[in-house]
Length: 379
Image 1: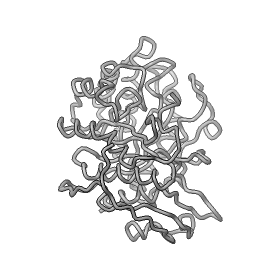
Image 2: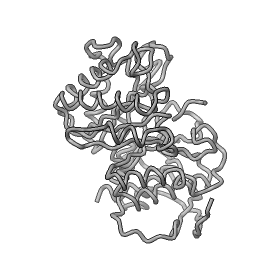
Image 3: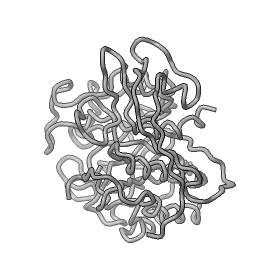
Image 4: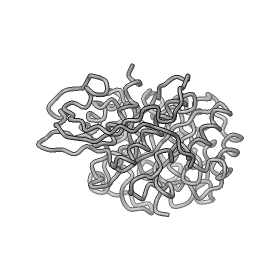
């Protein structure tokens, strides 16, 4: 999520008040039962859209990757301070992974601080930090979850912008070469090169990203790579930011196994920092139609690394409409990860982390919408 910085189509909105005893039974008729994951009865007003865009798609109606960002490991003071695990930052627990797997998610995006993994440029990776990531990757794999490794550094590393004299491309490439060597045998890992670079020009960032891609492949890793753009990785201005031209010209993966990662929020300035109801249910589609068309015309794939809404009905409608559009254009879209889960969010309006009462998990309204697009990924 970025730091603080229309032609209407007909649809029929049916709002139902539903008593949910087991949410999974509603989506696909199954749930990993157990004391920790029983869902308490509650009443939820959920929007359903019938023919939301007035279209009948002949494309495959399936998103292959649907899940959540699990925040925690990126927390702590900025400026190179590593902090203390469990106090300043946390990694997802097995209980969290169990919960999201029980809700049929098949991918998590794992934000972490790059300097905790490699405190000094070109030095070996931290064995203690790798052990924490290893634990998540290994347990998630056993639950059928892929893990996107996401250095959540906003285009900065070791106190300077990546691609600068103080944080050169070869140092960024060295980090990814070592990570790729370590995780080359982990089939459930995807490499997310960087979260939301924004100081670099489109061409500057494309060159840094390509250096990392080559380093990953030279390490022998064959997993998918997610390549972000500059300007906060915003999908709404993919062309104006210079991403469309620079990335298309520069990114050359020897295995041709990558997708471009974009982010999208539904508030007035697309930052995800305002939590009033979304006035236009089509706003997500309008913001991402350009990059979708670009991907289709150039034969590229897209992944929505971050998106999120507060829990009011209008905003849930906007989330549903965008995911429906992505599903209808799954020749371009692989899927996405909701922003965000994690136990330290508290009252954050866009949190999808479940609440608990008497040891029972209570799903957020956003989870109900997200699961609508997860079921097909398990068939």
